[in-house]
Amino acid sequence: MFATKTRKVSIAGVAAAGAATLAISLVPGAPASAAEPVAVDAASSPTARADADSFVLGTLGDVLGGQQDALNAQAEAAEVKAAAEPEYPDNLDGWIREALDIMKKHDIPGSYEGIHRNVMRESSGDPHAINTWDINAINGIPSKGLLQVIQPTFDAYHVEGTANDLYDPVANIVAACNYAADRYGSMDNVDSAY
Image (tube, rainbow, N blue to C red; front, side):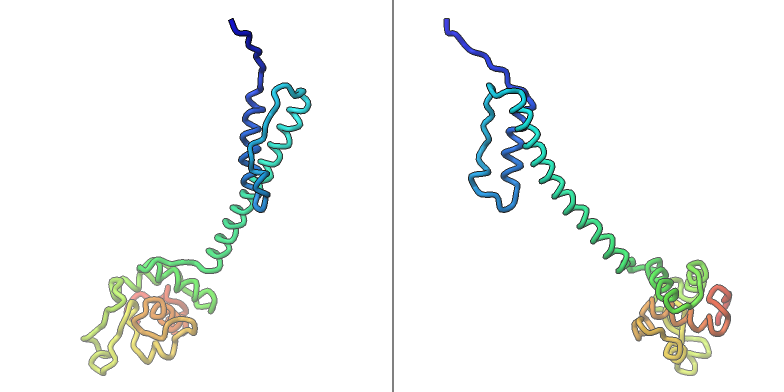
């Protein structure tokens, strides 16, 4: 029979050796020789193994901590960008919300509900709506867009920073609300053709 000598190696020590190889190979700029596997002598004293395990785990923690810091910085940058540049869906809800943000910057009163109610009455939410039958149309200046604004009114109440296009949904809303604020105090006070 063959005599075998059994040595006990702690699972933590083996795992730490594997982690050391991983950690050292992940360190940017580390020399190639540092990426070679680390040998753990099972006969080492428990204190030496604990010191090696602590070093390896500390190095792995530093690497993972650095990666976490990078992820946190990316998340913070994305939040700052989102706060600086809000995105609006290209639909009635988005147009109203964008218009309200612009109106707030220019101290133009109005609420989501007041704008939505008037848009639905005037154009049913169609930014390309055009009135071909009322007195304005008969006079050659038909009402157009979400809030059925005529060109002279749009030109007089257009707000800088919005498109200079009567059919642009956001520009139409902001100009109409600017006009309604001047004439009625707010778009919220408009309950019929204005």
